[in-house]
Length: 324
Image 1 (tube, one colour):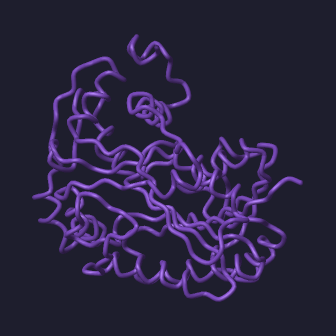
Image 2 (spheres, rainbow, N blue to C red):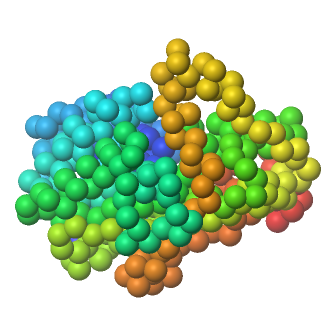
């Protein structure tokens, strides 16, 4: 029989890529969104829109009826984390628990605090020394403590790829490519953890397909691409076929306006991630699913770049090496 997944936040940055990946793998996808779905999902066979608010407990309970997996892909904007992260998590937990489904949650590296070490394993201590770190730790603790719930967190680095904007890749690094600049938020020689969303989504599918082996609460790390800013720039140059001048993120200006611009204040609070080299150890994930989906960096960056371009863009706009 066809397996069914309910994706909460299917119109969002990771949700729409997850919906595509599960549908490609032959799953029936119930795609929760408040209004409509992105063009690449709308009307696609195997994907059913569930229009409701993510905090509507009755609607979510009905949407989750009979599903095998619930994916909690909802992520409020930074300025609403304090009031929204836990209620959204509770709604997802209730929907999965009542339906008997496995609950899957994308995680991040916030849990390790501002002094995170370079190599992040499942045994790395978690430190709630920032508000967002405390919230992520609390959410995952709630997953582990909920009776009758099977859940799994797949932790990854910064996202890139997919057509929905809002990641560091599209708001910073790719924002001025056409004018010959590569805007990097951190020190170019430091290692940073990245997750190409199509690869991460495939990992979710692979784990979901082995849900019968998952009991209680489990955690996995998705290694993705652990590369320096210099590596990213060089790969981006090959993709677009032109040299790129490195430009720094104007953190001084962001700190200047942070006291009066709430979103900027939240972003500046997380700037430590660009000062600490870090990578995720995925040995547990590899042991569970075998080879982890991994698109070569050049190909992944080209895919991410293409996904952000208008539909009318011509392949002639790309370099010969990029087309190859």
